Amino acid sequence: MTKEINEVGWNLENSYGRLPKSFFSNQKPNPVSSPKLIILNGSLATSLGLNVQALQSEEGVEELAGNRFPEGASPLAQAYAGHQFGHFTMLGDGRAVLLGEQITPVGERFDVQLKGSGRTRYSRGGDGRAALGPMLREYIISEAMHALSIPTTRSLAVVTTGEPVIRETDLPGAILTRVAASHIRVGTFQYVAKWGTVEELRILADYTLKRHYPGVEEDDSRYLSLLKEVIKRQAALITKWQLVGFIHGVMNTDNMAISGETIDYGPCAFMDAYDPETVFSSIDREGRYAYGNQPYIAGWNLARFAETLLPLLHDNQEEAVKLAQAAIVDFMGVYHSNWLAGMRAKLGIFNEEAEDVSLIEDLLKMMEKFRADYTNTFRALTFHRYEKTELFGTEEFKQWYELWQARLGRQKESKDSSYQLMQNSNPALIPRNHRVEEALEAAVKGDFSVMEQLLDVLSSPFAHTTEQADYCTLPEPSSMPYRTFCGT
Ligand code: AMP
Ligand code: MG
Image (tube, rainbow, N blue to C red; front, side, top):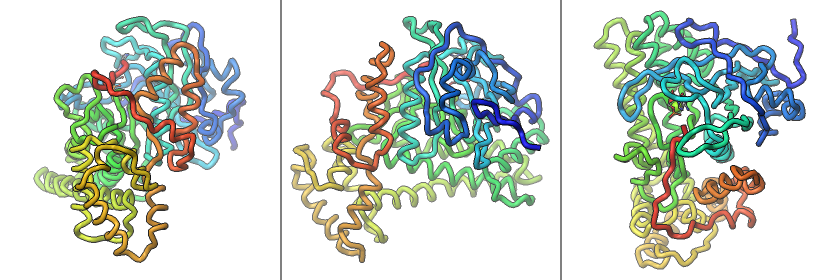
Protein backbone atom coordinates (compact mmCIF):
# COMPACT_ATOMS: atom_id res chain seq x y z
CA MET A 1 0.00 0.00 0.00
CA THR A 2 1.49 3.38 -0.90
CA LYS A 3 1.22 6.17 1.61
CA GLU A 4 -0.53 9.28 0.38
CA ILE A 5 1.93 12.18 0.54
CA ASN A 6 0.54 15.30 2.18
CA GLU A 7 0.94 18.80 0.80
CA VAL A 8 4.25 19.62 2.52
CA GLY A 9 5.60 16.24 1.50
CA TRP A 10 6.12 14.72 4.93
CA ASN A 11 6.86 11.04 4.74
CA LEU A 12 7.69 10.35 8.36
CA GLU A 13 8.47 7.11 10.10
CA ASN A 14 9.19 6.60 13.78
CA SER A 15 11.60 3.70 14.12
CA TYR A 16 13.29 5.27 17.17
CA GLY A 17 9.94 5.39 18.95
CA ARG A 18 9.70 1.61 18.64
CA LEU A 19 12.87 1.10 20.69
CA PRO A 20 12.60 0.35 24.44
CA LYS A 21 10.53 2.95 26.29
CA SER A 22 13.41 4.00 28.53
CA PHE A 23 15.31 5.37 25.48
CA PHE A 24 13.01 8.40 25.14
CA SER A 25 9.87 10.04 26.35
CA ASN A 26 6.96 11.10 24.20
CA GLN A 27 7.04 14.85 24.17
CA LYS A 28 5.03 17.37 22.20
CA PRO A 29 6.71 20.64 21.26
CA ASN A 30 5.29 23.49 23.35
CA PRO A 31 3.28 25.93 21.20
CA VAL A 32 4.59 29.45 20.64
CA SER A 33 2.64 32.68 20.25
CA SER A 34 3.48 33.98 16.79
CA PRO A 35 5.84 32.00 14.62
CA LYS A 36 7.56 33.70 11.74
CA LEU A 37 9.80 32.07 9.16
CA ILE A 38 13.26 33.64 9.08
CA ILE A 39 15.11 31.32 6.74
CA LEU A 40 14.32 28.15 4.84
CA ASN A 41 16.86 25.88 3.14
CA GLY A 42 15.24 25.34 -0.22
CA SER A 43 17.71 22.86 -1.68
CA LEU A 44 17.73 20.75 1.49
CA ALA A 45 13.92 20.81 1.60
CA THR A 46 13.75 19.59 -1.99
CA SER A 47 16.26 16.81 -1.41
CA LEU A 48 14.14 15.66 1.53
CA GLY A 49 11.10 15.53 -0.72
CA LEU A 50 9.50 18.58 0.93
CA ASN A 51 7.63 21.29 -0.92
CA VAL A 52 9.26 24.68 -0.41
CA GLN A 53 6.10 26.69 -1.02
CA ALA A 54 4.03 24.57 1.31
CA LEU A 55 6.68 24.90 4.02
CA GLN A 56 6.51 28.69 3.64
CA SER A 57 2.72 28.70 4.01
CA GLU A 58 1.08 29.44 7.34
CA GLU A 59 0.54 25.74 7.90
CA GLY A 60 4.16 24.92 7.08
CA VAL A 61 5.50 27.59 9.43
CA GLU A 62 3.20 26.35 12.23
CA GLU A 63 4.81 22.94 11.75
CA LEU A 64 8.34 24.34 11.87
CA ALA A 65 7.41 26.11 15.11
CA GLY A 66 5.90 23.05 16.76
CA ASN A 67 2.38 24.52 16.88
CA ARG A 68 1.05 21.86 14.58
CA PHE A 69 2.27 18.30 13.94
CA PRO A 70 3.34 17.23 10.51
CA GLU A 71 1.38 14.22 9.32
CA GLY A 72 2.97 11.06 10.66
CA ALA A 73 4.96 12.83 13.39
CA SER A 74 5.23 11.15 16.75
CA PRO A 75 7.32 13.63 18.72
CA LEU A 76 9.73 12.44 21.37
CA ALA A 77 12.69 13.66 23.41
CA GLN A 78 15.67 11.31 23.48
CA ALA A 79 17.43 10.21 26.65
CA TYR A 80 21.22 10.26 26.74
CA ALA A 81 24.09 10.80 29.10
CA GLY A 82 27.55 12.18 28.48
CA HIS A 83 30.91 13.24 29.75
CA GLN A 84 30.86 17.02 29.87
CA PHE A 85 34.41 18.33 30.16
CA GLY A 86 35.31 14.89 31.47
CA HIS A 87 32.49 14.55 34.03
CA PHE A 88 29.80 11.94 33.54
CA THR A 89 26.20 13.13 33.83
CA MET A 90 22.63 12.38 32.75
CA LEU A 91 21.47 14.70 29.96
CA GLY A 92 18.86 14.05 27.24
CA ASP A 93 17.06 16.38 24.85
CA GLY A 94 16.39 19.31 27.15
CA ARG A 95 15.23 21.67 24.46
CA ALA A 96 14.59 19.55 21.40
CA VAL A 97 12.07 17.06 20.09
CA LEU A 98 12.41 14.56 17.31
CA LEU A 99 9.37 14.82 15.03
CA GLY A 100 10.20 11.63 13.18
CA GLU A 101 12.39 10.29 10.40
CA GLN A 102 11.76 11.68 6.96
CA ILE A 103 12.12 9.08 4.21
CA THR A 104 13.40 10.93 1.15
CA PRO A 105 12.37 10.28 -2.45
CA VAL A 106 15.52 8.16 -2.87
CA GLY A 107 14.74 6.15 0.26
CA GLU A 108 17.20 7.72 2.71
CA ARG A 109 16.19 8.25 6.34
CA PHE A 110 16.84 11.53 8.20
CA ASP A 111 15.85 12.66 11.69
CA VAL A 112 13.86 15.88 11.71
CA GLN A 113 14.26 17.63 15.03
CA LEU A 114 12.98 20.92 16.40
CA LYS A 115 15.62 22.56 18.58
CA GLY A 116 14.38 25.22 20.99
CA SER A 117 10.87 23.75 21.15
CA GLY A 118 10.34 23.99 24.90
CA ARG A 119 10.90 22.05 28.08
CA THR A 120 11.07 18.27 28.23
CA ARG A 121 11.54 15.84 31.09
CA TYR A 122 15.30 16.16 30.50
CA SER A 123 15.42 19.97 30.77
CA ARG A 124 16.76 20.11 34.34
CA GLY A 125 16.90 23.84 35.16
CA GLY A 126 16.70 25.09 31.56
CA ASP A 127 13.79 26.80 29.83
CA GLY A 128 13.88 24.51 26.79
CA ARG A 129 14.17 27.48 24.49
CA ALA A 130 16.80 28.94 22.16
CA ALA A 131 17.68 32.43 20.99
CA LEU A 132 17.68 33.61 17.39
CA GLY A 133 21.41 34.47 17.17
CA PRO A 134 22.74 31.03 18.16
CA MET A 135 20.19 29.22 15.97
CA LEU A 136 21.18 31.30 12.93
CA ARG A 137 24.81 30.70 13.84
CA GLU A 138 24.19 26.94 13.75
CA TYR A 139 22.40 27.38 10.41
CA ILE A 140 25.30 29.33 8.85
CA ILE A 141 28.13 27.17 10.15
CA SER A 142 26.48 23.79 9.55
CA GLU A 143 25.64 24.79 5.99
CA ALA A 144 29.21 26.05 5.48
CA MET A 145 30.51 22.71 6.76
CA HIS A 146 28.25 20.85 4.37
CA ALA A 147 29.55 22.96 1.48
CA LEU A 148 33.10 22.09 2.58
CA SER A 149 32.12 18.39 2.17
CA ILE A 150 32.35 17.77 5.89
CA PRO A 151 29.75 15.33 7.27
CA THR A 152 27.33 17.35 9.37
CA THR A 153 23.79 17.71 10.57
CA ARG A 154 21.96 20.20 8.36
CA SER A 155 19.67 23.13 9.01
CA LEU A 156 16.29 23.16 7.31
CA ALA A 157 14.78 26.31 8.79
CA VAL A 158 14.81 28.88 11.55
CA VAL A 159 11.58 30.44 12.81
CA THR A 160 11.19 33.05 15.50
CA THR A 161 8.61 32.32 18.16
CA GLY A 162 7.40 35.82 18.96
CA GLU A 163 8.43 35.20 22.56
CA PRO A 164 11.56 36.49 24.27
CA VAL A 165 14.04 34.17 25.91
CA ILE A 166 15.67 35.43 29.04
CA ARG A 167 19.45 35.18 29.02
CA GLU A 168 21.76 37.96 30.20
CA THR A 169 19.30 40.19 28.35
CA ASP A 170 15.98 39.41 26.65
CA LEU A 171 16.61 37.91 23.22
CA PRO A 172 14.23 36.93 20.45
CA GLY A 173 13.30 33.24 20.79
CA ALA A 174 13.75 30.90 17.84
CA ILE A 175 13.47 27.27 16.76
CA LEU A 176 15.88 25.54 14.41
CA THR A 177 14.77 22.52 12.39
CA ARG A 178 17.77 20.24 12.42
CA VAL A 179 18.17 17.35 9.99
CA ALA A 180 20.54 14.54 10.90
CA ALA A 181 21.43 11.02 9.78
CA SER A 182 20.38 10.31 13.37
CA HIS A 183 20.82 11.79 16.82
CA ILE A 184 22.38 8.66 18.31
CA ARG A 185 25.40 9.82 20.25
CA VAL A 186 28.22 8.23 22.20
CA GLY A 187 26.15 9.52 25.11
CA THR A 188 23.13 7.46 24.00
CA PHE A 189 25.24 4.30 24.41
CA GLN A 190 26.58 5.60 27.73
CA TYR A 191 23.03 6.10 28.99
CA VAL A 192 21.89 2.59 28.05
CA ALA A 193 25.12 0.97 29.25
CA LYS A 194 24.78 2.66 32.63
CA TRP A 195 21.04 2.43 33.30
CA GLY A 196 19.70 -0.15 30.84
CA THR A 197 20.04 -3.92 30.53
CA VAL A 198 22.52 -5.75 28.29
CA GLU A 199 19.54 -6.76 26.15
CA GLU A 200 18.64 -3.06 25.67
CA LEU A 201 22.23 -2.29 24.79
CA ARG A 202 22.13 -5.03 22.17
CA ILE A 203 18.92 -3.56 20.75
CA LEU A 204 20.52 -0.09 20.51
CA ALA A 205 23.66 -1.50 18.87
CA ASP A 206 21.66 -3.56 16.36
CA TYR A 207 19.47 -0.57 15.57
CA THR A 208 22.56 1.61 15.02
CA LEU A 209 24.19 -1.00 12.80
CA LYS A 210 21.10 -1.31 10.67
CA ARG A 211 20.70 2.43 10.37
CA HIS A 212 24.28 3.57 9.85
CA TYR A 213 26.39 0.56 8.99
CA PRO A 214 24.16 -1.70 6.90
CA GLY A 215 27.23 -3.19 5.22
CA VAL A 216 28.38 -4.90 8.44
CA GLU A 217 27.74 -8.65 8.42
CA GLU A 218 25.17 -9.80 10.96
CA ASP A 219 27.51 -12.24 12.68
CA ASP A 220 28.84 -12.52 16.24
CA SER A 221 31.63 -10.02 15.64
CA ARG A 222 29.23 -7.29 14.54
CA TYR A 223 29.65 -5.18 17.69
CA LEU A 224 33.40 -5.10 17.26
CA SER A 225 32.78 -4.12 13.64
CA LEU A 226 30.49 -1.34 14.89
CA LEU A 227 33.26 -0.04 17.12
CA LYS A 228 35.80 -0.18 14.30
CA GLU A 229 33.48 1.51 11.82
CA VAL A 230 32.62 4.32 14.24
CA ILE A 231 36.34 4.82 14.88
CA LYS A 232 36.96 5.00 11.14
CA ARG A 233 34.22 7.59 10.56
CA GLN A 234 35.36 9.71 13.47
CA ALA A 235 38.95 9.58 12.25
CA ALA A 236 37.72 10.79 8.85
CA LEU A 237 35.60 13.52 10.42
CA ILE A 238 38.24 14.90 12.76
CA THR A 239 40.74 14.92 9.89
CA LYS A 240 38.39 17.11 7.90
CA TRP A 241 37.95 19.48 10.84
CA GLN A 242 41.71 19.79 11.29
CA LEU A 243 42.32 20.36 7.59
CA VAL A 244 40.02 23.41 7.49
CA GLY A 245 40.79 24.70 10.99
CA PHE A 246 37.36 23.99 12.48
CA ILE A 247 37.18 24.01 16.26
CA HIS A 248 34.09 22.31 17.64
CA GLY A 249 34.49 23.84 21.07
CA VAL A 250 32.50 21.36 23.13
CA MET A 251 33.48 17.82 22.21
CA ASN A 252 31.62 16.22 25.09
CA THR A 253 30.65 12.60 24.50
CA ASP A 254 27.00 13.63 24.10
CA ASN A 255 28.09 15.81 21.19
CA MET A 256 29.73 13.01 19.22
CA ALA A 257 27.35 11.39 16.75
CA ILE A 258 27.66 7.67 15.98
CA SER A 259 26.81 8.43 12.34
CA GLY A 260 30.09 10.36 11.98
CA GLU A 261 28.38 13.71 11.42
CA THR A 262 29.43 16.94 13.11
CA ILE A 263 26.71 17.73 15.64
CA ASP A 264 25.85 20.47 18.13
CA TYR A 265 27.09 23.78 16.92
CA GLY A 266 27.45 25.74 20.12
CA PRO A 267 30.68 27.61 20.71
CA CYS A 268 32.40 26.35 17.54
CA ALA A 269 34.46 28.65 15.32
CA PHE A 270 37.16 28.56 12.66
CA MET A 271 40.77 29.31 13.46
CA ASP A 272 42.32 32.41 11.89
CA ALA A 273 46.07 32.47 12.69
CA TYR A 274 47.49 28.95 12.92
CA ASP A 275 47.97 27.99 16.53
CA PRO A 276 47.25 24.51 17.91
CA GLU A 277 46.29 26.07 21.24
CA THR A 278 43.43 28.08 19.77
CA VAL A 279 40.28 28.01 21.90
CA PHE A 280 37.25 30.23 21.37
CA SER A 281 34.75 28.90 23.87
CA SER A 282 34.33 31.08 26.92
CA ILE A 283 33.70 28.03 29.12
CA ASP A 284 36.73 26.03 27.95
CA ARG A 285 39.08 27.70 30.39
CA GLU A 286 41.68 24.95 30.39
CA GLY A 287 41.77 24.48 26.64
CA ARG A 288 40.53 20.89 26.80
CA TYR A 289 38.92 21.34 23.39
CA ALA A 290 41.67 23.41 21.75
CA TYR A 291 42.29 22.89 18.02
CA GLY A 292 45.38 20.75 18.54
CA ASN A 293 43.66 18.57 21.15
CA GLN A 294 40.70 17.57 19.02
CA PRO A 295 42.18 14.28 17.74
CA TYR A 296 43.14 13.22 21.28
CA ILE A 297 39.74 14.13 22.65
CA ALA A 298 38.08 12.16 19.86
CA GLY A 299 40.23 9.18 20.88
CA TRP A 300 39.19 9.67 24.51
CA ASN A 301 35.51 9.85 23.57
CA LEU A 302 35.83 6.72 21.45
CA ALA A 303 37.36 4.91 24.41
CA ARG A 304 34.23 5.84 26.38
CA PHE A 305 32.16 4.44 23.50
CA ALA A 306 34.21 1.22 23.48
CA GLU A 307 33.60 0.80 27.23
CA THR A 308 29.85 0.84 26.68
CA LEU A 309 30.16 -2.01 24.18
CA LEU A 310 32.23 -4.33 26.43
CA PRO A 311 29.34 -6.65 27.41
CA LEU A 312 28.61 -7.19 23.72
CA LEU A 313 32.19 -7.72 22.58
CA HIS A 314 32.94 -10.92 24.49
CA ASP A 315 31.49 -13.01 27.32
CA ASN A 316 34.82 -12.81 29.07
CA GLN A 317 35.43 -9.28 30.24
CA GLU A 318 39.21 -9.46 29.93
CA GLU A 319 38.90 -10.60 26.33
CA ALA A 320 36.40 -7.83 25.66
CA VAL A 321 38.78 -5.22 27.05
CA LYS A 322 41.60 -6.54 24.86
CA LEU A 323 39.45 -6.33 21.73
CA ALA A 324 38.30 -2.81 22.59
CA GLN A 325 41.80 -1.60 23.36
CA ALA A 326 43.21 -2.94 20.12
CA ALA A 327 40.51 -1.09 18.17
CA ILE A 328 41.02 2.16 20.08
CA VAL A 329 44.79 2.07 19.63
CA ASP A 330 44.18 2.08 15.87
CA PHE A 331 42.38 5.42 15.97
CA MET A 332 45.45 7.65 16.09
CA GLY A 333 47.15 5.73 13.29
CA VAL A 334 44.12 5.99 11.03
CA TYR A 335 43.69 9.65 11.90
CA HIS A 336 47.34 10.39 11.20
CA SER A 337 47.37 8.72 7.79
CA ASN A 338 44.15 10.53 6.81
CA TRP A 339 45.64 13.80 7.95
CA LEU A 340 48.83 13.21 6.03
CA ALA A 341 46.89 12.42 2.85
CA GLY A 342 44.81 15.57 3.32
CA MET A 343 47.86 17.76 3.96
CA ARG A 344 49.64 16.35 0.90
CA ALA A 345 46.62 17.36 -1.18
CA LYS A 346 46.65 20.86 0.36
CA LEU A 347 50.23 21.15 -0.92
CA GLY A 348 49.54 19.63 -4.34
CA ILE A 349 51.42 16.40 -3.63
CA PHE A 350 50.14 13.22 -5.28
CA ASN A 351 52.71 10.57 -4.39
CA GLU A 352 54.27 9.70 -1.03
CA GLU A 353 57.72 10.39 0.33
CA ALA A 354 58.80 9.78 3.91
CA GLU A 355 60.00 13.38 4.28
CA ASP A 356 56.56 14.80 3.50
CA VAL A 357 55.74 14.86 7.21
CA SER A 358 58.62 17.19 7.96
CA LEU A 359 57.84 19.39 4.94
CA ILE A 360 54.30 19.82 6.26
CA GLU A 361 55.33 20.27 9.87
CA ASP A 362 57.96 22.85 8.95
CA LEU A 363 55.33 24.92 7.18
CA LEU A 364 52.96 24.68 10.14
CA LYS A 365 55.71 25.62 12.58
CA MET A 366 56.53 28.73 10.53
CA MET A 367 52.84 29.61 10.35
CA GLU A 368 52.63 29.35 14.12
CA LYS A 369 55.78 31.36 14.67
CA PHE A 370 54.68 34.22 12.41
CA ARG A 371 50.98 33.95 13.30
CA ALA A 372 50.09 33.37 9.68
CA ASP A 373 46.44 32.95 8.80
CA TYR A 374 45.71 29.25 8.23
CA THR A 375 43.21 29.50 5.36
CA ASN A 376 44.85 32.42 3.60
CA THR A 377 48.34 30.89 3.69
CA PHE A 378 47.17 27.80 1.83
CA ARG A 379 45.20 29.99 -0.56
CA ALA A 380 48.29 32.08 -1.26
CA LEU A 381 50.33 28.94 -1.99
CA THR A 382 47.58 27.72 -4.32
CA PHE A 383 47.47 30.90 -6.38
CA HIS A 384 51.04 32.16 -5.93
CA ARG A 385 49.74 35.36 -4.49
CA TYR A 386 52.10 36.14 -1.68
CA GLU A 387 50.63 39.13 0.12
CA LYS A 388 52.88 41.17 2.33
CA THR A 389 52.56 39.02 5.42
CA GLU A 390 55.39 38.55 7.84
CA LEU A 391 55.74 34.87 6.97
CA PHE A 392 56.21 35.35 3.25
CA GLY A 393 58.96 37.91 3.75
CA THR A 394 61.21 35.59 5.75
CA GLU A 395 64.29 33.71 4.61
CA GLU A 396 62.87 30.61 6.34
CA PHE A 397 59.85 30.67 4.09
CA LYS A 398 61.96 31.15 0.96
CA GLN A 399 64.01 28.08 1.83
CA TRP A 400 60.89 26.05 2.55
CA TYR A 401 59.39 27.21 -0.74
CA GLU A 402 62.40 25.89 -2.67
CA LEU A 403 62.08 22.51 -0.96
CA TRP A 404 58.38 22.42 -1.71
CA GLN A 405 58.88 23.27 -5.38
CA ALA A 406 61.56 20.60 -5.65
CA ARG A 407 59.15 18.14 -4.01
CA LEU A 408 56.46 18.96 -6.61
CA GLY A 409 59.05 18.23 -9.26
CA ARG A 410 59.51 14.67 -7.93
CA GLN A 411 56.15 13.37 -9.13
CA LYS A 412 54.85 12.53 -12.56
CA GLU A 413 51.90 14.95 -12.38
CA SER A 414 52.39 18.42 -13.84
CA LYS A 415 52.52 21.56 -11.73
CA ASP A 416 49.17 22.52 -13.25
CA SER A 417 47.59 19.36 -11.86
CA SER A 418 49.17 20.14 -8.50
CA TYR A 419 47.60 23.58 -8.40
CA GLN A 420 44.28 22.12 -9.48
CA LEU A 421 44.48 19.64 -6.61
CA MET A 422 45.30 22.50 -4.26
CA GLN A 423 42.32 24.52 -5.48
CA ASN A 424 40.06 21.61 -4.70
CA SER A 425 41.65 21.04 -1.30
CA ASN A 426 42.06 24.59 0.02
CA PRO A 427 38.87 26.56 0.49
CA ALA A 428 38.70 30.12 -0.79
CA LEU A 429 37.03 31.09 2.45
CA ILE A 430 35.70 29.91 5.76
CA PRO A 431 32.96 31.46 7.86
CA ARG A 432 35.22 34.08 9.42
CA ASN A 433 34.17 34.90 12.94
CA HIS A 434 33.78 38.64 12.33
CA ARG A 435 31.72 38.00 9.19
CA VAL A 436 29.42 35.61 11.03
CA GLU A 437 29.00 38.08 13.89
CA GLU A 438 28.25 40.90 11.45
CA ALA A 439 25.58 38.77 9.75
CA LEU A 440 24.01 37.79 13.08
CA GLU A 441 23.98 41.34 14.39
CA ALA A 442 22.13 42.55 11.30
CA ALA A 443 19.74 39.57 11.39
CA VAL A 444 18.78 40.08 15.01
CA LYS A 445 17.89 43.67 14.02
CA GLY A 446 15.72 42.36 11.18
CA ASP A 447 18.10 42.78 8.23
CA PHE A 448 18.74 39.33 6.75
CA SER A 449 20.56 40.47 3.61
CA VAL A 450 24.05 40.28 5.17
CA MET A 451 23.44 36.69 6.23
CA GLU A 452 22.02 35.73 2.85
CA GLN A 453 25.07 37.10 1.05
CA LEU A 454 27.36 35.30 3.45
CA LEU A 455 25.49 32.02 2.95
CA ASP A 456 25.76 32.52 -0.77
CA VAL A 457 29.56 32.91 -0.86
CA LEU A 458 29.99 30.07 1.63
CA SER A 459 27.95 27.69 -0.49
CA SER A 460 30.78 26.99 -2.97
CA PRO A 461 34.02 27.32 -1.00
CA PHE A 462 36.21 25.80 -3.71
CA ALA A 463 34.99 28.09 -6.49
CA HIS A 464 37.57 30.79 -5.73
CA THR A 465 35.50 33.60 -7.24
CA THR A 466 36.46 37.27 -7.04
CA GLU A 467 33.38 37.92 -4.92
CA GLN A 468 34.74 35.54 -2.30
CA ALA A 469 38.01 37.46 -2.04
CA ASP A 470 36.21 40.15 0.00
CA TYR A 471 35.37 37.57 2.60
CA CYS A 472 39.00 36.54 3.09
CA THR A 473 40.11 39.71 4.81
CA LEU A 474 41.02 39.37 8.43
CA PRO A 475 39.31 41.26 11.21
CA GLU A 476 40.89 44.46 12.45
CA PRO A 477 43.33 43.65 15.24
CA SER A 478 41.44 43.71 18.50
CA SER A 479 42.59 43.85 22.06
CA MET A 480 39.97 41.24 22.98
CA PRO A 481 40.32 37.66 21.74
CA TYR A 482 37.26 36.31 19.92
CA ARG A 483 35.00 34.47 22.35
CA THR A 484 32.09 32.15 21.68
CA PHE A 485 29.28 31.13 23.99
CA CYS A 486 27.15 28.03 24.23
CA GLY A 487 24.03 29.99 23.47
CA THR A 488 21.85 27.93 25.78
P1 AMP B 1 24.66 21.30 24.62
O1 AMP B 1 25.67 22.12 25.37
O2 AMP B 1 23.85 22.08 23.62
O3 AMP B 1 25.24 20.05 24.06
O4 AMP B 1 23.57 20.88 25.71
C1 AMP B 1 23.88 20.11 26.84
C2 AMP B 1 22.61 19.68 27.51
O5 AMP B 1 21.92 20.81 28.01
C3 AMP B 1 21.63 18.93 26.63
O6 AMP B 1 21.02 17.96 27.42
C4 AMP B 1 20.67 20.01 26.22
O7 AMP B 1 19.41 19.50 25.86
C5 AMP B 1 20.59 20.84 27.50
N1 AMP B 1 20.17 22.22 27.26
C6 AMP B 1 20.86 23.17 26.61
N2 AMP B 1 20.18 24.33 26.61
C7 AMP B 1 19.02 24.12 27.26
C8 AMP B 1 17.89 24.92 27.59
N3 AMP B 1 17.80 26.21 27.24
N4 AMP B 1 16.89 24.34 28.29
C9 AMP B 1 16.96 23.05 28.65
N5 AMP B 1 17.99 22.25 28.38
C10 AMP B 1 19.02 22.76 27.68
MG1 MG C 1 24.67 18.61 23.05
